[in-house]
Image 1 (cartoon, rainbow, N blue to C red):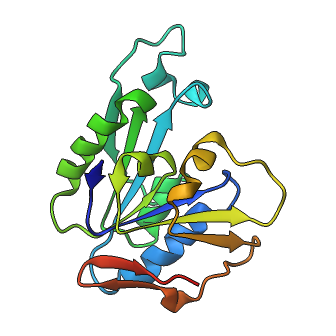
Image 2: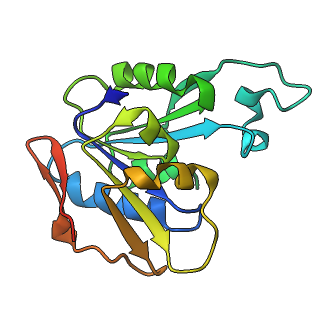
Length: 188
């Protein structure tokens, strides 16, 4: 487990639970206090390997590239999650894409990429199995959708579960604080 001080991790029960909207709101709020780096960690396993053929070698014509890689988002205008973080005011945004069984090594490379004393907000469920952040918040929608496998695996690590109704979240803005470069999440 890699301890990354200054990181707030946000996970979600399923893709449609407004995790990126929550992350964007936090970046917009806290970037006025100092530089925030956005991070998106995607792990590839049998559940989602068809979405990431460049790393999972699930595409017959594409060669296996690496078991993980880190890219920096440069376009704040596209519709992907990393672009939305950049548009919200993050100084930089990195995307770590890793095969699940190489996540530990990949996270160590991410730690080097971020550098010491970096304040970051990370979107991921499964990265919590390899990273010890300041706090881990799990977003859960109010519908009856099933928990995706990575969310089921990590919900027990959540410091707080925040409900989303599609228009807002059941957490008071003051319950999340950034003090001295460290995240604090008040418990209800």
